[in-house]
Amino acid sequence: MSGLTASMPRLDAEVLIIGSGAGGATTAALLAEAGIDVLIVEEGPWVDQGSVTPFSLEQMDQQYRAGGVTVALGLPSIAYTEGRCAGGGTEVNSGLYFRPPVDVIERWSAQHRIRDLDPDALSVIAAEIEQALTVSTVPGRTTPASEILRDGAAALGWQHNEIPRWMAYPPGGDAVTGKRQSMTRTFLPRAFAAGARMIVDCRVDRLHMAGGTGRSAAVTFADGSTGVITFRDVIVCGGAIQSPALLQRSGIHGYIGRTLAVHPTVKLSARFRDEVNVPDDVPVHQVKEFAPDLSFGGSASHPGLVALALTDHWKAFSKSVVQWRQIAIYYAAITSEGRGWVRAIPGLRDPLVTYRLSHRDRQLLRSGLARLTLLMLEADAEEVYPSFRGAPIVRNRADIASMQQAFAVSKASVMTVHLCSSVPMGELPGRSGADSFGRVHGTSNVFVNDASLLPTAPGVNPQATVMAIAIRNARHFISSRSTTDTRSTTDTRNIKGHHER
Image: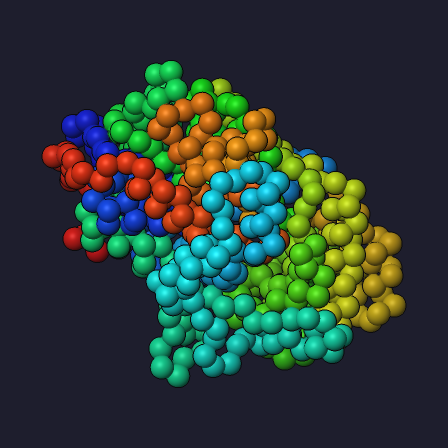
C-alpha cells in the first residue's frame, strides 16, 4: 500500500510508534487497547503472507532492507539482514521461539541495574505471547534437513531438541503446512481492531527536538513527498540498527549505538544421498551441547541460497549445485564477546555499522565449524562444503583437520540475523542508552522498545525476549500516563487499518 500523499493534511497522534516488528506491533496493540491514540509508521511495504515464497530471492527483494545484503565493516566484515516491511523481522525469520532465559534476565538485572526486571513476571508474559502466536512444536513429521541435525547430534551424544515456532498447523499437519503467526497476522490486527492507524512506505528521517522533548517527526513517503507528524510521545521500534541511527540523526547521542551485539555465524552446505532440501522452510531442531557459547542449526536452503553458499570456492564446489535437492545449509552460531558501532553519517541515508570480533570469538567460530562438520559426517553426509574462501571438500574425519588448517575467520562468510544491544537499558550512567523501561536518557518523551534495549546478546533467538520486554515496558508506559482517548480527526486516506484487512 502506498504512503500518504503530499497533499494530505498534517498528521498527529497521541503516541507515534516507529516500526512494526516484534517490538512495535506488540507495543501498538497494548497501547491501542488501553484507549491511547496510536499511529504506527513503517518504512517498508505491507506484503500479504503467501504472496511471496518464504526464504526466496523475491522475498529478500520485497521484505528485506537492501535486498537482504547489508554489511557491518570489520576484519572480517559481517553480513546481516534486516526486515523492512510491515511486521518487520517476524515476517521473514524462521519463527523459532525461545522463552527469555532466566539466567540471562537475572544477569541483566544485576549487572545493568534494570529496575523490576523479574524473570517470573516475564515468564507470565511469555505464556501470553505463546497463546497469542500459537507457539508449538511440529505436530507431524519434521523435514529431512531438520532430522539430520537430530540424528547427527544423537550419534555423537550431543544435547539437541526441537524448537517450537509461532505457527498455526491444520489438523493432521506437518512441518510444511504451518501458517506463520507473524505480527501482520496477530498483534497488528489487534492494534487495528482497537483503533490504531498505520502508514506504510513512510520513512522517519528525524525527530524534531526542543531541549529533551520530542515534538514531531519529519517523514518521507515512497513517492518522495515529505511531511510532519506531531505527537505527545514517540516510541522508536526500528530495530538495533535503525533505532540508534534515527536517534543520532535527531541529535540524541549519549550511550547510543556504541554496543551493538550480534550472534555471528559461519555456515556450510552438506550433500546427502537422498533429497533433503525443503526450499521454503528451515530445520526446527537445534544442537545445544555447547550453549550458550556455541549452537548449531539449519538455514534456509532455497536453490539460490545454495548456489550463493557454494560460491566461496566455486571452482571446487560448482559441480555440486545441480544436486541442490540433496543439499542443505547449516550454521554454527556463537554468543560474541565483540561489540559494534552504529553511526549515522550526515548526508548518508543508511548508518555506518562496524563490528569487531574478539580473539575468543574467532576461536569459537573455528571450532564451531569443525564440530558442525563432524555432526554432518555423523549424519551420513557424503560431502561437506564449508563456507570460506579456498575451503576443501570434506568427505571424512581426516579431512576435518585439513579444513581447520585452511580456515581463517578473515576468509569466512560470517553473517548474522540477530542484532541487539545498541540502546541498552539500565540505570548505570555511561553504560545505558535508556532507562529500565525504555525512555531514552536525557529525554522526556522519547522511548525505545525493541531489540536495541537488550543489554547483551542473549545466546538464543531474541525475538521472544524482545516481545516480552516490549509488553512489560508498554504496560509500564500505560500505567504511568493518562489513557484518555484524544483521537485526532486526521484524514485517514492511505492509512492501513483493521477495516482494510
